[in-house]
Length: 478
Image (cartoon, one colour):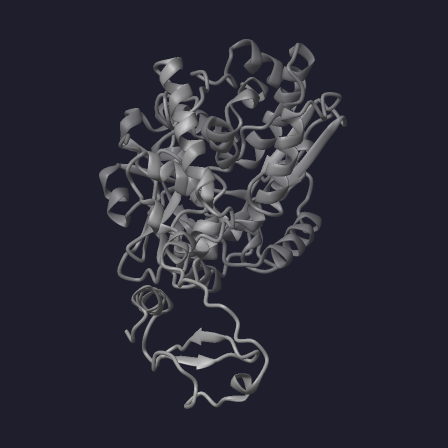
C-alpha cells in the first residue's frame, strides 16, 4: 500500500462499527474489521461522504495546525468563496477579510477574480480543443480522483487547466515576493476550505509536483473565532474588490456561468455525478462541450466542513451578490496573454490510479476467474454485514487474503442449518401441547405441528443454529 497522506482519518475509539460510512463510499475504500472501520488509502478520494454519514463522529478531517503559521515570516489567508456565505445575509466580504487578519493572518488573497479568469481561459481552451467530448472540469479534486480510480476512460476528458486556487496562490506569491522582498519560502499561503477533498489536494496534488498553497484550515474550525472578530469589527469600510462572477463559483453552476459557451452542463451530488459519468462512458453527452461536476450537492456550498446549511448559504450568496457593486469584468486580452505564457496550464499529466496493477495478462485472467468463483459462492445480498460494502468487495478481500468466506453470515448459517424434520401428519398428535410432544427439551411445536428450534434467552442465532444442528444429527438433546 502506498504511503498517501489523506486528511480523512478514522478514530477507532469512537467507531461503533455501524457500516454507515462504508455504505456511502463511492470507491468502496472502507472496510469494517473487528467492529472498527478502516480506509484503504489507495482507493480513498477524500470526498468526505463518510464524514457526513458517520453518526458517531468517528470520521475526522485532518487540517493544518495553528503552529504551522509560525514557520513563515508572512502568512496569507485565501478564503474559499463559500466562506462569504457562512455568516448570514448581511456579512460583507470586506468584514470577512478583516476578521481573518484579526485572528492572525497578515493578509488576505481573494480567489474570485481568478475564478472569473479561468472561466475565460476555459472558453479559449474549448475553442482549440479537438476532443474527446465533453470536457470535464478539474475544479473539484474529488471528481478528479473518482475518475482516476473508477473511470479511467474519462481521464482524457479532463480539462488541462489548473484550478483557480492554485493559480491564485501562484500569482499571489509572485506579487508578495516583489512587494515585500521576501523569499518565496518565507510566505505561507493557507486555504480556508469547505471540504476535505480540497485539503487533500494541497497535501497530495494531482497535475502538480507540489501545491502553491502551504496548508489549509476548515471553515468550521475557524468559524467561531471569525464570527467573534466580525462582531467586534466597527469599521464601515466595504471595499473587498470581489468579482461577482467568481463569487458565484461557490455554488453549482457558477463555473459555467463564468463562461460564454452555453453548450454546457452542471451536475452536483455524488449519486448524480456517478450517474452522469456512467452515461458519458456509454457514449452519451458527446454533443456537450463542457461539464461542471461537483461531488458535494450544490457545489462547495454543500461541503462537509461548512457551518451554514447549503440552502441558507445559497440564499446568503444571492443577497450578498445584490449588495456588492460591480467591480468590472475580466480583460479578454489579459486572459489571452496569460494563455500564451501557459500560465493556466497544468504542470503534469493526470494518470489513472490503478489499485491493482496488472503485470501479466495471463495472471490477470486467472485472478479474475478466481474472484468470480468466490463471488459465485456468496448470496448476492450486498448487505455489508461481513464488513465489506458488497459481495463483490468481499470476494476481492477473500482473494487478497484479507477476509474469509465465512465472514458472510449467510454462508455461516448455511453451513450450520439444522436438518429439516418431517411434518407431523394431522391427527391427535397435532393437538398435543409442547409438554406432551416428543423431542429434545429445546424444541417446541410449531403452528402446524412442526418441530422448531427454540431460542433460549441470551444465546445468539449462530450458536443456536450449531446446537440445533448437532442435536438433529445425534438425535439427542443438546
